[in-house]
Length: 389
Image 1: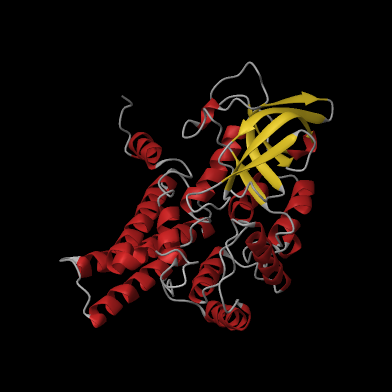
Image 2: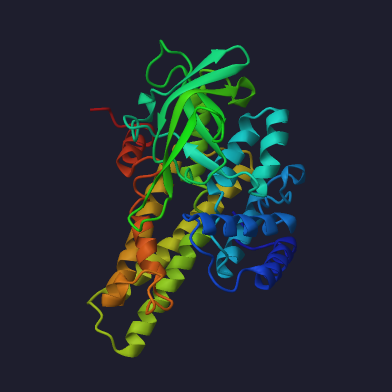
């Protein structure tokens, strides 16, 4: 791994920085967990797409820029440096998009990737069910083949972006005699199809980030099967690898948080606020861990560019970044004292209101993408070779 940037990468960074400085919204958009904010973020995504920045590592014919993964990391660094909005279609562009690249037919790539890149179509993730959360192999929702269609029945819950999304990607049991990991298929479902009902689920802050989705004899074209029928578990594990190991959480996200945390600490010291013993070292450790995660990601990307793949070590990544995110936000709230209780909408919040909302979201990090307890099992069994209990 060569940590020096090439002249071409430096020119790419300069171009990205100039465009983002000229075009990133001057003030934060409303939360994309509200209908108004959702549409504001879609408009921003369309602007990114028009300028060729929506998904830089995708091929141009699918709405990308044809850049490599190293340039994507450079772009992410500039994106967070500019304070640009969160990506409302992250389930699509960071998770499903790479999965379609790997498993999709030419027709599926042409149909789904361009409107995904522009966020003309926003995607929800439909894996969890009331009795299949961390134990995703216990999925009960069915998709039974009937001619050219699948007839879908059952329920999905905690569907991220589900309240306002247009499509859902999910695992469904296509072999009714199967159990556990077998007989599952990965199906793409339009959320406006007859027989599909969406019920929003509110977060702690009252915003609808998730949804329950109910299927009552909903018909979906069999052309929406992604990958081999009955082998959906393998397709989903590829998606989970992208989610845990690389695309969903770029290092720049945590480097940006760490930099803001350092700024909070410096401000507190400058004002003479009481600071608990060891706070300086704890803040410094968070900053170093964010940098370490960045270097590890560059190493992963270098391996991928050399023909390697993301393996079970994705579970290590997921534990590291999710627990780092919680730690950084906990330190920020400790530094803020009583001001930590202010949400962004509070008149006195100023520039600190985002920390509480960020903390509430960070608490979900050790849960989504497979709970950290499950990730530790994977590490123990598949990386360390320890026996199962």
